[in-house]
Image (tube, rainbow, N blue to C red; front, top):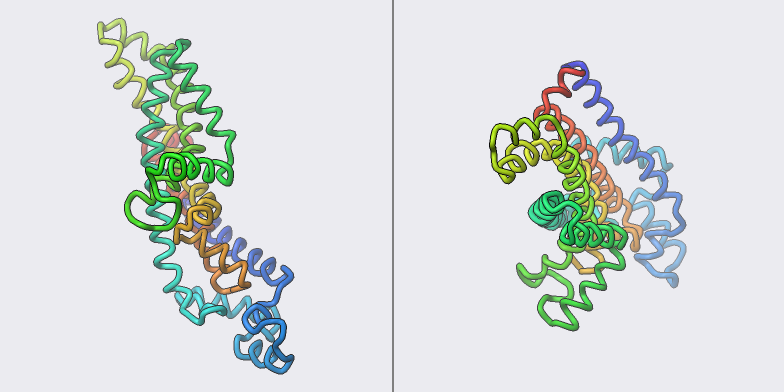
Length: 307
């Protein structure tokens, strides 16, 4: 078990390192010159050369890569090319806002998804089950870039209940959190419902019913508790997708998170900021998956015994 943990941890480190190296190379291969963005097309060649030397962009690619890696190992993410601010300062506020958005989406998913999946399984084959199942299929088929504007039209423009975009208070988080949550919500409903239906026909449930327990007690204590094991795995695996999905959602709703910062840095060819954003999102994704597997092994002892 300990050897497996060490191997997985080493594999995690190499994953993060590989993501950083690949993203670094791809960013520098993409057409576009940050110096040209900063100085404008009317700038002189001498000014461009001088600024490239000042920013270190005249050095070979492998030298820039090694310098970036050494800097990150020392906790130094560099300085923004575009506004000359420390990248660490820019990222700290952005990642806090992104995690607030992602956790809010996860809470919506947990509260609504588990409840709806439970009710669909309880009334299997009836109109409530069919309604919940069809709605979940609808939500899972709608991409974020379409769902976001649709929610803005409905709740902000037509009804006037919520802010259109920005961070203007607690109500500003509702639409972006709902946009992120609906796709994961549909998967949670479907898995909760299917797992419960399967367990309701198991020997454990039949034995509990034979003891005279009420149907609700059987569902909650003997079925729903077992369903939580695959749900924990699902939500842990999908939490990373919330961070990557935030790139589109934050841009649509002007939410000042890591996704919006990433898009803006790509537009201005701000290499240090872009690399740091990608590294942070990738690290969060990989680490969450890693700790989800550990949590799954802790929740379900059968997984530990099979190692």
